[in-house]
Length: 288
Image 1 (tube, one colour):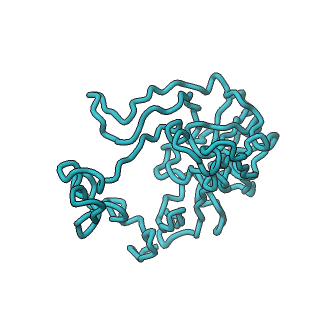
Image 2: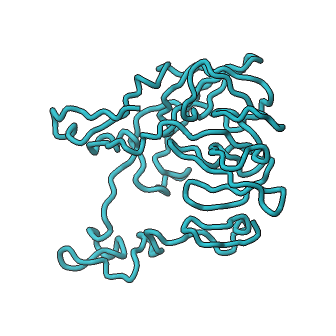
Image 3: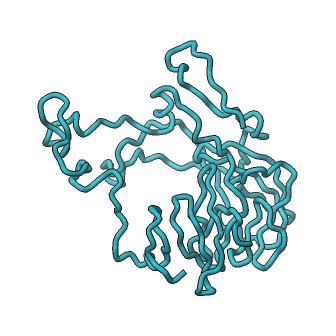
């Protein structure tokens, strides 16, 4: 995919770049039966109080219902179109199955219109991008995405543009496979859980430059004020004469908790036993 830069006719266009979707997108309007409307809350809860800051004013968008379960086993589906999804960084593919059902999936790299994909719940030799297969039947070293964390639930892991995980093999406990995630974390995931073969498409997304503040507002990102620019009663970093340092041993959130690179995972988390290496490469468990 080509990254195109805009001619700098205005200051906002000087640093702007975008992906040329015309070479990938084959259909502009989504499938009506697979579209719904989700009401925006701008980071507010049911009492109208802001619980997540810096959200709001996003462009109107309709939600495309994605099939993260892939539980229509052994039924082939044809790729009808590759489409843009305003709700995520990856492209989506419209699949028409032989039983008449239609659904959207996250489009893996190199998936084209006219290709056939399928979900399997048993051993298969058809290991190609777009097929959904249990982890125990995927060869070692294969790149996968859209991984289920729990059986019969939707896929939770590795869904962003350009991301992939790698199957490293079967663990000492034959019920689990060893998976290396994009963060560098190596963990155990049950063999029966499904994963989709291939890498998530639109890998050039990280190279795009928004170029101006207005594009962030269209995405629903509101401005952020530095803590050091506030008063001390508003933020722990505030106060001082002129451009003063934060005056703290470590950076803090507005509520006094540690910030910027501090590990927030609970030390007694029940799922810690499934992590073999953390994202920094440190060995946590040796039972893999």
